Image 1 (spheres, rainbow, N blue to C red):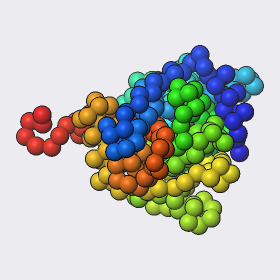
Image 2 (image 1 turned 90 degrees about the horizontal axis):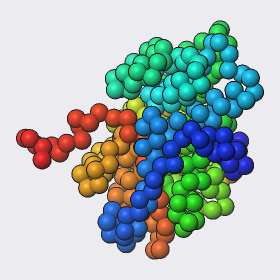
Image 3 (image 1 turned 90 degrees about the vertical axis):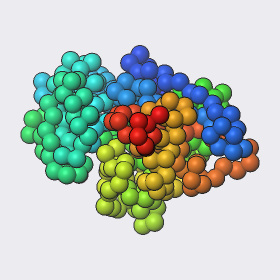
Length: 320
């Protein structure tokens, strides 16, 4: 469980090491009829996603406690969390090993190696890579960095919500975030508790949070679809579930086709490049999965941009 104090502590710890990513406000009628929408451009963060915040908080806190040893750090990831851990490890001058599923996008695997990580591909889903990472941590003494279910990871992710709230002068009622394992949702909900409500958005093909809401507890779900490379956890994290229940996070689902359309719109209309998982929040607005009330002040977190560029061009001969 984490609260706003944990997020504030994380911000003090990592402030000198992360980018304060910009916010752009789209006027009512620009993206959504009758509603202005603020975009938190977190895809501009180090390593191309919000994950750098949590990884830096985890490593810097461990360094403060003297827990970073010669074995370095280890993580399991479909890509973004591993990139963040590799980046943080390079900053701290320690070794990083990252286990990734064989389905991880080639662009993310290549970038991991560029950052100096020892990359090991294991299994066809995140859960198997995580098992291998845990085994390595136990055998070697490496510091385990969970992709989404450690307090320091979640608190670090929540620092973007503190920035967002300040950048909007507190004028925000609802913040939409994409959910995979739920680390971002947990951090944002903790940071904004009592200030704004949070909506967790998932593809129907990867409904970890929605399934937990239906079952009354985290459960394993099959994961597939367009955003599985970044939202590929098969169970929502325990921390995310506890924070979501405490703060009343709402769950909504979107179709893959709407995610693809939202991602393309962000590129064609605003020249914003994001991965499919990040586009889920815009898909929720465009598809009507979340319909703002009259006067509702809405913000969305564009959480990552580690994607292949070739599929952003419009369909048809020659593109545009």
